[in-house]
Amino acid sequence: MGARCIFVFFMIFNAILGLSGIILLIGGIITATQSGANSVFIANIVLGVYIITILVLGACSWKKTGVLIAYFVLTILLILSEIAVIVITKVAANSQGISPVSTGVDLALIVFGISLGIAFLSFLFSAIYFCLMRKEDGPQLYSDVKNMEYTNMPSYQNV
Image (cartoon, rainbow, N blue to C red; front, side, top):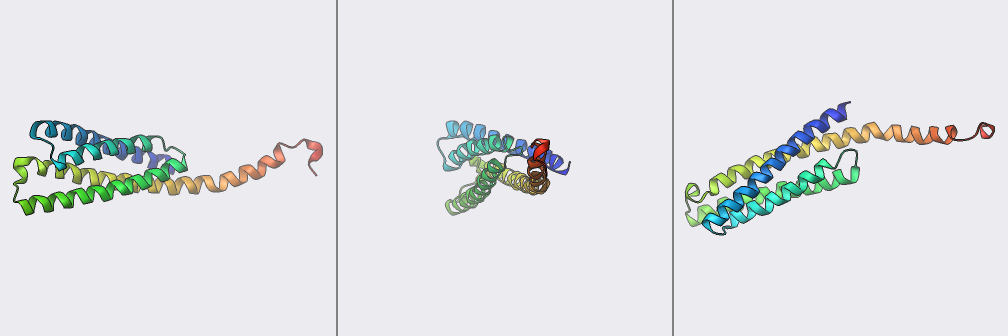
């Protein structure tokens, strides 16, 4: 019962993460077409598509260990890439003397920061779900295989 509850929290944060990915994608497309192709807005588009891909992977991870491990790896890469984009954008804006409010960079950084926090929470709940899933399934699988050997045999073969 505990693993299902954690999975519900995982799916809620995964859906919120997907919503932030859609916001990044749409915001990147709108601002890139209006103000020209800035590297921050291209990063919005790329990370938005990447987050939506992770959303689909997370939705397919119910009781599938391999998919959940791929989700772990991609979420860690997402967290690292969002941290890199935030740091690089802040350093580039400060070194060029650009006013963040006038270029929309500040709003993009806020969305990146929110998405980063949600990605971390989604990763945390998926890790807890993975541990609970392994804990619940581990002994049951062994006992089912052990009992299956004796229950599927005809009665004359049971010694």
